[in-house]
Image (cartoon, rainbow, N blue to C red; front, side, top):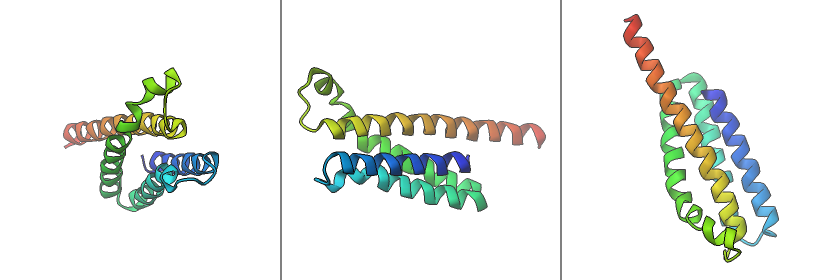
Length: 122
């Protein structure tokens, strides 16, 4: 899981930088995925030495990221209809939202599997 967390952090950093460039450096909010990515990258590095703490922190950050992007994700209908005010923000938020949902599902599954394994071997 630490490598997955680090990888997700790097992907989100790249998405944020691309979004910032694509919006012609108009708003720092395009960098929000990159900010999330940096925090997840740090959590992943921490998780290499302290798996529980780093991964639990990364999962909390991911859930907060999901909640934070949900408002823009709700505008996907407007984007598809061509009525979105900020199409780049909606697209970036949808990509971030999907990646974070997948990460949380994988992370929670990993935690459950680990606890079951410890219970069986104990």
